[in-house]
Picture 1 (cartoon, helix red, strand yellow):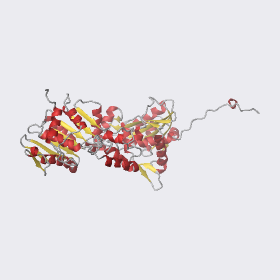
Picture 2: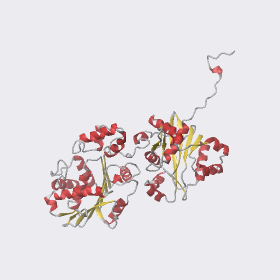
Picture 3: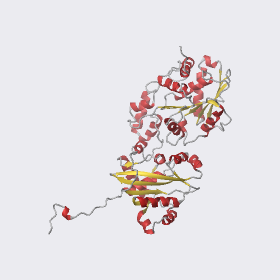
Picture 4: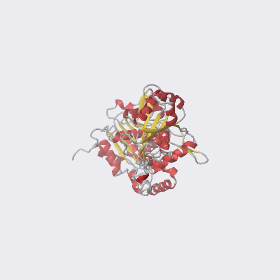
Length: 513
């Protein structure tokens, strides 16, 4: 007989030594499902060696139990190493306790394990004294994770990290440098946005940039009915097994009846990237606007929306071209190059990465130079049939001088540049125009991740009369791109085709005299 592979050895040990620590089958042998075995084999039989495994599916699919099993495998099982350090990392003490408590129950319920694994409840530690291996549960609330040297890490519910960085994640991953073959397990439902840490890791894994990264992602297809069994099953491999099907379907019905619950349902049950707060426009509708874009808007009427920032913040200019009855939109973004990484960290958004990818332009220096933006606008007027440019009057008096410097006259500015208020009176009809265009499939965009971020962050404020406006104050992040888009669409919605004069003699019913 051939040698047993690592993956099968891990499976055999789990099923031979571990018991189910809680739930309806408590105390029974831990019999792994086929999809769990598949994940384990992908991790341990990877010919390239696995450095990181990302396992993502909906809630109530036994993520924590599987994590605890793998933890025990490395603490005292076939993957255990002498004098090794193992850690689990969570965003809160309560979350950190869940995995520790589950692993501790596994130890206490097994006569074999409890004889040589010590549970230290107060320190949230498990010690295998025979091997000298130690597991400890950590949380982001801990004062420091430096000085550690882990060989095995479980990053529990990493999807809860907002933004592209986590000090605890970075500290632990950096600390593995002294180990020959460290392994990190990331196990979580998806993060809400593409700019969050887990989303960045998943997207990188999809590109197969690193063969040592294993990705097991279960998520519902966005094209499916989100409340159907088919969609639920895609994101939940345990549906109808140890995951309560009746309870899950009841949650789907609740979300269907009450739209306010839909974002949470899509994120936690369907394992989709969805903002928990209800945005101005839903993620699915916005993504429905991704389409084939013209390389150039030459020959088409074009309208601009310009959201001027403070000197260090995001500036956005949206172009809307009327093409075959639809609004084709492209948005350019700018940030100062100086302090870009710090700005990325402060806003919890990967501006530095987007700049490298060409989705965001940087301007040399510490501030947005209005002369640079004015030159860009001048070029648009020279190259395209720009009918008008809507602008927020905030800071425009400073920008006006830059427009004159690049060749615009006072008459040009008065005729072509339209002040656009940000209050209810101006924004409410503009939002209706934009909503209508999106809902009717008449707005197309180029899937720029900076604009996608702005769309996801956009929050609506209503007054007692039902009028609406976009508000930066209540938004979770930058929305500058959406403000420029809404202004540009509002301008484009006023467009009327020029009538070409015709001769009365072209009318067959015309009679002279």
